[in-house]
Image (cartoon, rainbow, N blue to C red; front, side):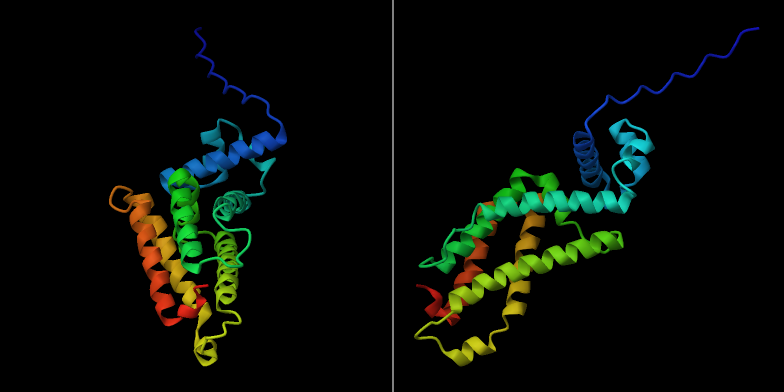
Length: 221
């Protein structure tokens, strides 16, 4: 009697240190997001793409939400480091137009340099798991707070300022509008880099800030 062929055993994944394995799984999840979208990330999908078993993934993450939060935290920290490198250490005597233009240019250059990272960060959050949406909301709030601090710095103690104008300025809404424009620019450079290169988007960011300063010219020191 001829025995049926024995199914080939799945090769074992090479052993890795826990920290190295964690990075491999996060890298794999990032690849899945860029290829198929955030909804495609699951323990099964990550295990299959990484060439490991499900228990290996569960050894690092409790579930797909945990994995996605860890990925966004990692990529968010790296993104913030990219942007922080564009900021002057001291705002004293700084030209606000040059500061915000430099941040915009640094941001768009960062998107071009690490498109996989920024594609995950700039994805629409509507279809994302609740945990991911909450993380994105906290991250966005932190960025708005940092931008608002810079705006208030340039509006501070201006001798020739109209204090009524400053009091009436809706800084919170201004920051939301500026950041929405920057984020949309990031998506444009990701999806159509030839049509919307960093130079074009940076020029628009500069125009927006200069237009604002026509109303508040005393911020230019």
